[in-house]
Image 1 (cartoon, helix red, strand yellow):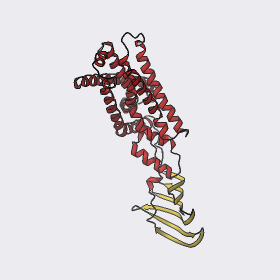
Image 2 (cartoon, helix red, strand yellow):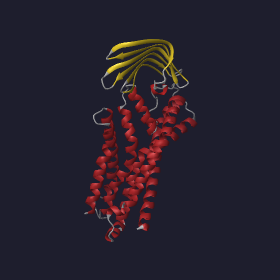
Image 3 (cartoon, rainbow, N blue to C red):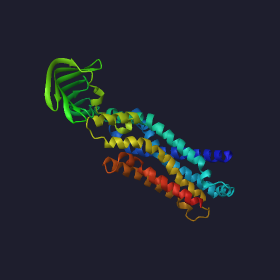
Length: 362
């Protein structure tokens, strides 16, 4: 079996790489021709033109890898069936699933590789590509994300912040209102109001600050400070800055932390949460989609519809990727939960793929 596994694994890997490189080349050529006249009209230097498309390659790789997986599997299984190799293997007592184990393992390895690639390479490449396009080619200014006004921030269940204006360049807040609650009774326990707060030495320095304490919603003390440091205020300047990056330009942990910041300042984060789950779910399309190629090995060579097999494979890829986009849209619009929207297509197609394999075994 080791010889057979090695034979199937190596042949599938070769087919995958050939198809992947072909699709990468086609997508790049199409993209270059679509943008060539636009870039040429702006007088873009050749090195920037080339740099833009170099940074585009990681995105195209992640997008086209599932297509290469399915078509590679279809080619391989078709060749095994065409030369009656699959029949010989199965008559020797080897099941279809065992026969396909090497390509399933390869699919898992590719999925893990794409997951790692999407965590470390793709965000960097997309950020650089966007910078080249917006700043170097279109001469746009980078979006100012450090100047914000009328911020609501929820540190936890017991502390609510309102900041009229935040200057992220100088780490300064103006007209700050911090309300503390007793979580068990839902009553105000303390209120801090300051004209200004400045972040220095990892602490907030409050100026013209009033601190009022309450008991049973009644004022019991009031103090005024021209300057006071409040170490129990845990909010940091980074918590108040909205990122200018697209979710694709952030890795999993950056996006997770950004979502937490959005949640605390009361901003909508449904779209970002969907993208967070997609960072995990999408790479496994490479594993699930290859399941659809396995039943091809059980189709006799004389089958009159064999010529439609590859058209069917392309159709499956289109339906699968479209289903992911539909789930994504459902999540964006809060019709389903972010987790379901990211994993729904994978679950459905995994069930269908396993059903087809089990049926082919009979």
